[in-house]
Image 1 (cartoon, rainbow, N blue to C red):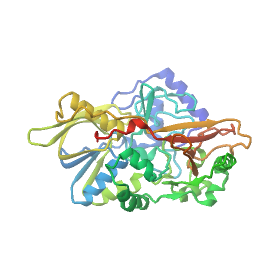
Image 2 (image 1 turned 180 degrees about the vertical axis):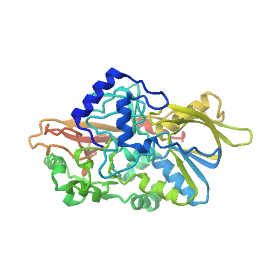
Image 3 (image 1 turned 180 degrees about the horizontal axis):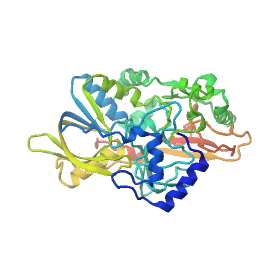
Image 4 (image 1 turned 90 degrees about the horizontal axis):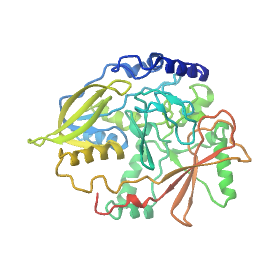
Length: 427
């Protein structure tokens, strides 16, 4: 089921009049919106598969770090339970599974009702739901993270670049071997995630006009753009352009997921391989809120089981012999700081939660580009440039999502070395 912008705005108006009258355990969305979600993504309303009471190993989270951990443990013969707070979202070449970046609804944001814009986009009202994208505010920092099986692999813009040695060594200060990463781990990741630069036929197509304009402009400024690798499934992108799939990547959808599987996300590689061993089960809608260690050495986890709107249905305790926290920078830090400060894990030291900062990203948009941008901008990134004249800096060709009108906007993503991330001796 696909709704037009007019239909959706009408539904939002009705929702404002009705209010959240449905049962709390069913949805915080107004009934008309709850009906929209049930029709568009009925899989979200399937019964929850409860995690076992005890597991040999538990992995909290299902993003990049957690997915790799779960797979390698299962391949080593360990029986693994993965606990993920978000839903298991399906993909479909025709259905609009996720919300649109330009006009989002509750499917977009994790427990964030009210007004919830992405940076640079209009503020629109959304209902409180268990959406795929978690935007949390912490003073001057907004943290963006995934809330779904597959974690950040569903909501990032697909760029995968191996760092240069000079930057890697500056950050890890010899604690991790760059030579080992370069010889063993980076090639393995490239193979598993099928990393590849944008093919020339895709680059030359209409939806990527803004990418060619960006490259032309940086060349005029004296830089040489370099193609960058990504996890995009270019056959799916080509299918969008040929009409075999609902447009998604080619109309600037990315931050809120790609409904047709245009990204080769973790559900299609590491998590699939973990499940295929027969020793790994993944349990969506399981949010771990506290961790402690019992007298016999087992770990005990307090787990909320959630409905599709991320409201708590019930709370239970599960245990495991070995625990692996892969809930991302925010999720893992939150659990560890809480465990230390409450005495649930008394052996944690005072450095837990320190040395934390941004990842050096900054979104940049230039207006009034004389060359235009090709109307709607596709979301995969084509290239980047580097500048070492001051602080180490790269700019990546980015996109301005959503608008069907050529606003002459050209976007970039800047990345710099963030000194707050260097904390020698505190790993």
